[in-house]
Image 1: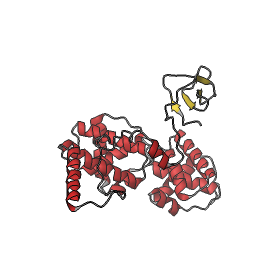
Image 2: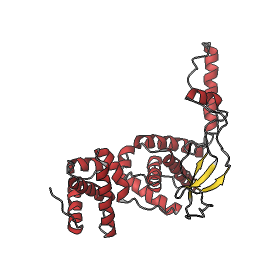
Image 3: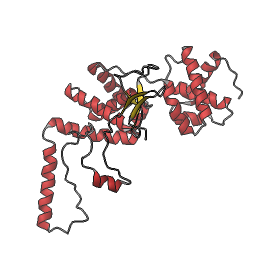
Image 4: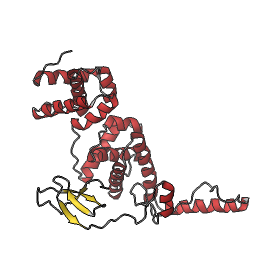
Length: 308
């Protein structure tokens, strides 16, 4: 069974010069992802020596805990006493129950011993809540946690709202991982003013000296197409229109979401798919006037005829 592509930065394919490889553990081989040339044989399988066919077997056979994560203040190294009694235990006496309650409370207090950990505990819990509301993947949460930890180390959060700094870290992580989330969406999800999040984000970039490339309009196309339930042909044509507009310099100085919405609107008309400006505006969180303006700009410069 082949796993996902692995970037081997120190290796290079002698046949095509590629730097992406995949590992085939059934054959114990590592091959080039571009030409298929076998680079290495008899590779070591780093996975477990046992097999599990359901989650119950996996829990019984596993001999290690959860992996380290930066989304927990202690990186998941400490133990946790559950607040709920197990169903398999016999009913406890009141005195024993009070004793267990005290142990749980002191164990929780011992995990957070200073102001730094208290701030990090609250911030990371808020980060997890915001990320769940935005449906962000695990890698974005880890990147956002790294940004916030660096902000705490540089004392950037002192005297500022924790929620706004967490939102700025999430926005920076989304842009770093090429996840199409706008500042308006994040502000609406965390219930904080867009201006405050933008101020915190600019401060993050200035203080941490982090270089993050801006999001392009193409990154928003697949998400809008899925929300509008359009076909793959519309998506391909919209990307082609955007690439042509970018090569002619029509996207510079324009909002990426508005340009993407106008491209989808043009592509839906060319493909004779019914999709109104109102539907696209609601999905893209822009106004219909913005779509019409971008649509007219693209129509004046690009060489195709749209029949409405």
